[in-house]
Length: 96
Image (cartoon, rainbow, N blue to C red; front, side, top):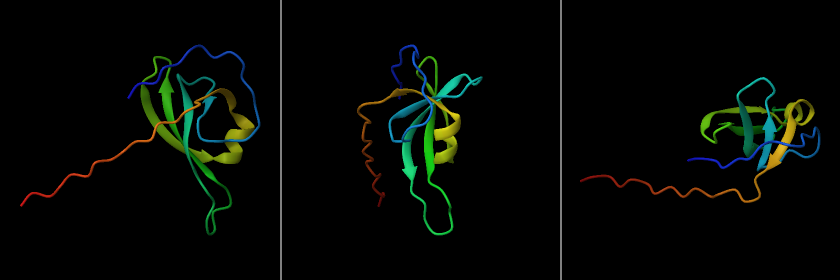
């Protein structure tokens, strides 16, 4: 999978964290794309966000999870993916 990106222009901090947001990582050589939000359950006191790490060539180079509030308050929003693709898994069939 490859991601098409163009230069970052107008970073913002705060606002709602949602699927499709792209955040700068200051000092790292990649940005974070939010692909899922794990809603708080049981004793977990916050929502976790799941991110793909994308380098400046558009290659996926890693992933991470982080508390939603941390990303909202400490990361700069630099872009938004308007349409997130849905991945369809075709399960392998057992052999007889």
